[in-house]
Length: 362
Image (tube, rainbow, N blue to C red):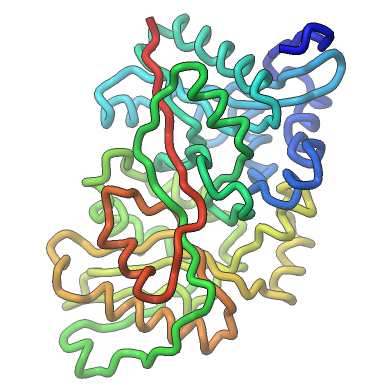
């Protein structure tokens, strides 16, 4: 610690002026941070502040050194995740800072809140989305983050590990830098399966049962409700490319699916996470040519039949036809090597190493 440095204070956001400081903090953490971070949607942060939306009980924290805002975080709880992990966990997320001392000050406040709530562990970084997402980047800091992932500098894992936090659920993001030149599957290859494109609107209702069934076995996944799914896709429907939402049905039942979106992270960085009508119209006129695979999966009863391999080929063919340059892939757990091999075979490589962190509370 620098003896001459001002003390770091951490306090919850109470005023609208502080809310603006919270939203805009990443823009004031240096040029490298601005170019690489993944903004949270400003509309989500405003809902958390007002106690609205489907995820209640979120507190926004700001760290200050003297009069300067130098870090932020949120705290929250999830009964569904407690049940899944078999613990009572104090969650934290939206952790942004470039100084390990600032990170430690924010963690200290998180731990105080966890003890007051009777929690046995602290778990994070995790954002309050319908399923557990987030984590901290532990390697690959030089690569910018992309939509539906996270990015931080080395100060975050350094501070977490110095404070006794243990890694959990390690994973990687992936990049396929050049879309493979493949032919779409033939009708004979599809056999009794049928390829469908549901379109941008009403997707949540169509996809949700299969999504929950496909990911139930994952150690961090909690079931998503229709209201939660609708909330998280709100505003992004116009951005979606229908040809990047292929579904496979067998006898009218959804068996396999993928959801890929053009990556809007560039405009989100420039606008500090604000995605209003002007930004959406700009994205429609100049659709990004970098794509992000948000989710893909196969229902358990249809796994092992090669459906996902056929769907992936179809997706590559559609990406090339749409003029997309590259595909990035969110969060593949290291306990799921089969999914990683799909992208390795396509010439892909790991981009960021990501991990959640846990710490017991005495």
